[in-house]
Length: 279
Ligand code: NAD
Image (cartoon, rainbow, N blue to C red; front, top):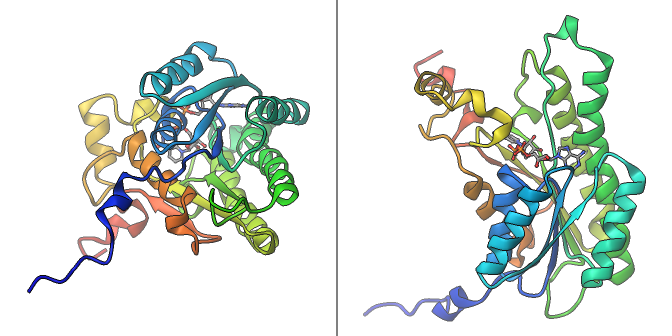
C-alpha cells in the first residue's frame, strides 16, 4: 500500500512570499535582477533599486509586470546615508512597509595589493560593506517597529546579505573585495545575534562564480570558462536564477529556523577543488 504523502500537493501552488514587500539593492543587472524576478514570481512586491542604470531597472520592472507581478524602481546610491534614507522613505510611500531586504549591490575595483589606491579600497568598502550596514539598519528599524504580521510571515522581517565565497576564500589581487565580504560575514552574524529576539532573521548567500557583468572576463571566452570550471567541482558556471531560487527559500517561512548562516551557492567552489586529486 502506498503511504499517503505528508505534504499536500496544494502547498506547491501557494506563492511563498504573497503580499510581502521586498527591496533588492543593485537590481538593475546580474544577480539582483534575477533575485527580483524570482521574488516577484512568489508574490512579493519588489522595489528594484539602481544606482545609475534606470534603463536596466525599468526593464526588470517591466518583466515583472509582464508576468503579472508588482514592482517599482527607485534610484539610490546605497553607500550614501541620505540616499538610503530617501530610498526607504519612497519604499514606504509606495508600499507602506518592508518585509524582505536583499542587500545585493556590490562592485569590484581590482588592483595588486602594493598598487591599491586608497580610493579603490574605500569605494569597495563603502558600497559592499557600509552600504549593507546602512540598508540593514533602516530595514531592522521598520521590522522592530511593525513586528510580526500574522498570516504574512512567521518573522518580523528577513535580511539577506549578498556575500561571496570570498568571505572565506582569500583572493590575491582583490584584497579590498575579500575584506569587504569578510566584513559582511561578521556584520551578518552580529546582526543575527542582536536582532533574533525581535524575530528578525538574518542570513547571507555566498555565490560562487555566477555569469554576470561583474566577472565577464572570467567566463566570456571558452578558454576563460574552462579555467574557471577547474575551480567548480559541479562543472557548471552559475546563473542569476540559481541565486534567485536560494533567496526565495531564505526569505520564505520554509527556512524559518535558519538564522545567522551563509548559504554557499557555488557548485562546490568552497570544497578546496585542488585537493580532489589528492592534493
Ligand atoms: P553586477 O555588477 O551585475 O551587479 C551589481 C549591481 O550593484 C549593479 O547593478 C550595480 O549598478 C549595483 N551597484 C553598484 N554600486 C552601487 C551603489 N553604490 N548603489 C546601488 N547599487 C549599486 O554584478 P553581480 O554579480 O550581479 O553582483 C551582485 C552581488 O553579488 C554583489 O554584491 C557581488 O559582490 C555578489 N557576488 C557576485 C558573484 C558573481 O560571480 N557574479 C559572486 C559572488 C558574489
